[in-house]
Image 1: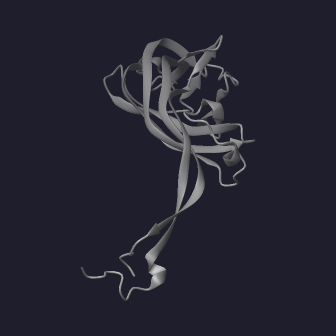
Image 2: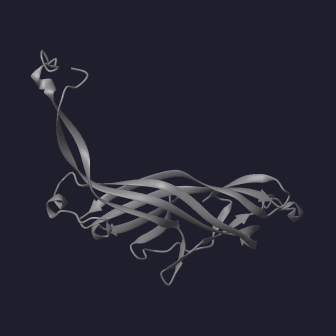
Image 3: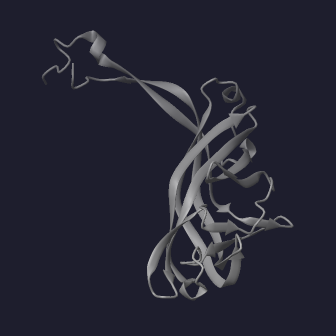
Length: 219
């Protein structure tokens, strides 16, 4: 059999590959837009100004008849390890509603925006999480203890300076309901209930080198 290694530079016989070794994962569907009472999550209440509500003729005011779809936009996901005991997960986003008005025309409503009054007082931290408005975006934050991940973290890895969590959003969905009339900034509006859910995957890992013996194609 022909010796494939003959005449090959010895330095090309070994490959040093840099990877992130996954130690544990946190997988869960989280409700990332919510109201809260007695530690129970509820949809937030919105009052959306009627179309034409900025004019003086109330006969031209048309409320929302139905919501055709909901889009989650401008999503940013970040995370960090806090004192080697918990992961801080942060998701920033906006919501766009595709609506049908009472005159059967369609439109898009961005939440938050000047055309939407949020009737809910967004809750402070409950059970390690909170939702707030920052610079025109919803910001969901949750602290997850490392003991809630799907595998124990070796003690020696907790002191590894490369210990990192990586947050991935696997899917987002919304639940909504159109209610009756309301008042938004002293203008007539339509009340809407809205919740947003996200399937999240947070991977906890450390840097690691892998040595592979072989013949790289580019040598």
